Structures are given as C-alpha cells and as structure tokens.
Length: 311
Image 1 (cartoon, helix red, strand yellow):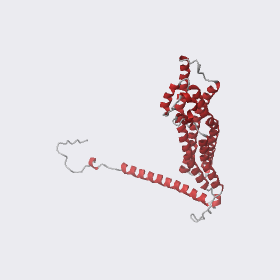
Image 2 (image 1 turned 135 degrees about the vertical axis):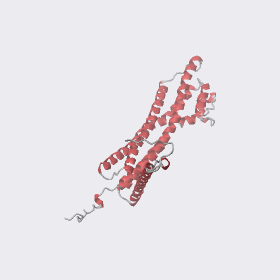
Image 3 (image 1 turned 45 degrees about the vertical axis):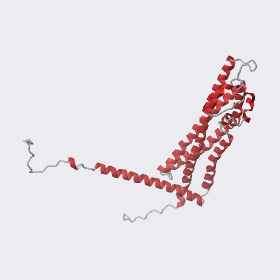
Image 4 (image 1 turned 90 degrees about the horizontal axis):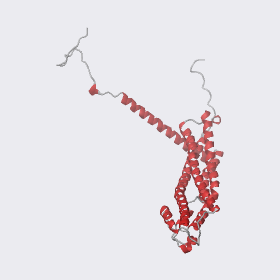
C-alpha cells in the first residue's frame, strides 16, 4: 500500500479511557485536608505553649513546698508529703505532655503523604501507567493516615481532658496551706492572680478576682475541641465520598476547575522556561563591540610599532 494512504486507527471511545475527574477530586480533598491539618496543628501548638510553663511551675511549687514544710515545721499541718494519688496525678501530667507532643508531630506527618499526592497530580501524568497506581496508593495512605491518627490520639486524650483540671486543683488545695507565699512565682510566670484568701483557700473558685484557676483549667485540651477537630477532618471526607461515588454535575464542575488549575500551572511553568531559555541565548551571543580588534590589509602600521617577519 502506498505510504501516506494508510487509514488512521479508529479513536478509542471515551469508555476505554481512564477518566481523570476522580483524581481531580482526590487532589482537591488533599488540599482541603492540608488546611484542616493546619488548623489542628495550630491548636495543638497553642496548648503545648500553655502546658510547658504550667507543668514546670507546678512541679517547682510542689518541690519547694516539701522543702519549706520540713524547714518551717508547722505542728498543726505537719510535714507536706505527696500521696500515692498525687504522685499518680503527676505521672498523668507527664503522660499528657508526651501524648500532646506525639499528637502534634503525628499531625505534621500528614503533610508528607498529602504533599506527595498533590505534587504527583500537578507534575506528572497520572491518568495511565504506573503513575496512576502509585498516585492512588499514596492518596489511600494519606487518606487513612489523616483520619486514623486524629481519632486514635483524640480518644487517648479524652481521659486526661476531664481528669487533669480537677487533679491539678486538688494538688494546689493540698499544697497552698503549707506554702501560700510561693504562689507569687507561679502568678508571675502564668500572668494571672489567685487573689488568695488564706481563710478561704479551698473556695478560691468563688472569688471572681481569681484568674489563675480558670486559666489552669483551660490549659488542658478539652473534649469539645477534640470533637471539633475530628469533625473538621471528617466533613470534607464525607463530601468527597458523595462526589466520587457517582459522576454528578457538581462533581464534573469541581473536577474541571481543578484540572483547569493544573493546566494553568503547567502553562505558566512552560512560559517561564521559554523566557529563561530566550534570555540565556541573548546573553551567550552578546558581543562587546568596544573590545573587538580588526586588521586592515594594506594599511600602514601605527607609529611606534615594530613589525616581526617570520621567514
């Protein structure tokens, strides 16, 4: 058969092509989850900053109270010693601190898988081949990790959220009669005031001028905040499952917007490369006319110059 007259193969129908609208919705979920994880990280970081001075001042105050009770012995009160429950409460404080730091870094770990999935979508063709499989594997890991880690750590933190505020208040109730003057250092560090009345030390909560006890109670993660963080993480996932289950009109519209964003980013990247390449060529072929030397045949030599003949 004559070359050039070979009929073109029939185009594959759309049903045989891998649609990319699901990948577009998946990467949009990754971007939304990045925002939700950022909210969670900011909240956890705030409570980490609150917990550090509180724990340090509480332990320092209890240590000084034990020493003062031995030096200035009070026959009515006796020597201040921590009971088994109070030692267990301090152990719970340390466990809470460890869990909070682990929760914080586990949240940051979400960005590793989310960033890989987003970069794959915007930099390579994920509609065919191994890239298609790798993208969905990475997305699946990111999806499961982001949902599982916040639920695991939230349920681990629930007991401490309700236990530690009451336990900390009881620790102070026991120690304050032995060392009321030592509260001033805690007040300065925390930026609050107990406004203590020694005759009503156990009823500090009833004093509206007491700002330290409410501040100490609010320094621990509350159950309400943990539930809010979980709902913020679950809400976009539920919407994503509904959109990806069937190709609704809104699914196609959202997917087309994300795909248009991908096309625009690639166009800008290609344009920037072309401009850089064009500038590179200009710089390479730039000639400095002022430093060029020309030789005119037949012209007499300049005065003062010597001619050398090579035979």
